[in-house]
Image (tube, rainbow, N blue to C red; front, side, top):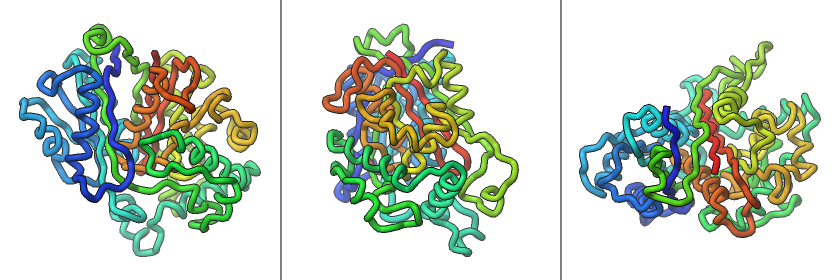
Length: 380
């Protein structure tokens, strides 16, 4: 298996863009990534396009605007882990020797408001009014609070941190700092989850150009190596199916635990070796719980990490220095690639106030419906 590097990356700001089509948004990110790599579209050998809400053949409709070169352009969907699944396909295509390079593009234009329940839930859940994500985020948070003594203030501190970090991210949908009191006093969505603790579905795009490591010097003097790129689907206590899992007596390992363990082994590192991380924070509690699933602390100690400031910029392991999904919003197809964009910037040393000094190893993580999870580890 050949080693694989990222040699170019691009992004379209996350937010709402009524005057731009998904094709316009996608082309912005793709062109930026190709320019960053010093590569022409005609030189790209294969492309993978991640999306969830867009129509069939969105990848073809978008990328052939650059020219019909006859390459394979594959749409990939894996819920919130769509970008990670697409990145893995590109990684494997190059690592196997089938191709020397690939473009990965994630794009989304999502409806306003809560996600379409028909995309995520069974018919019986919709008819019973059990088809909105925040109620299950709240149930998971309440279980953690009961089991470990986690407090709503600790959960709110995650949101405070991420909103504060967002001020320095020009690609975030929201760039505004909030106090702890602001977070706690914002409207309750599902107790203990408040409005300023959750992300907004939105629009955006992100892209990466990958190539075999042994030819990366043709394109850049700052290649970022993909040390691991894992996508897994695992059965665990899925908060979307309470009748089947929330009261289960058998506790299966969370898919993040399984995927991160495999990623650490592939990269030859442990969680203690990470310099920076971007993780799923569709709500603030999920980030706190992810600290535990990634092995940054023991089960039940996520609240301690946020209290002690371990995950702040300038501390041991900054998490979501970009502002996270809480601030950027979550255009599902672009979500993981947006994380990759930020980690690559960190490892290249191209950020300002949110730059982690001498960052060498970064992790990106997403989870989604159906037990999907992607974990990517990058090194310089």
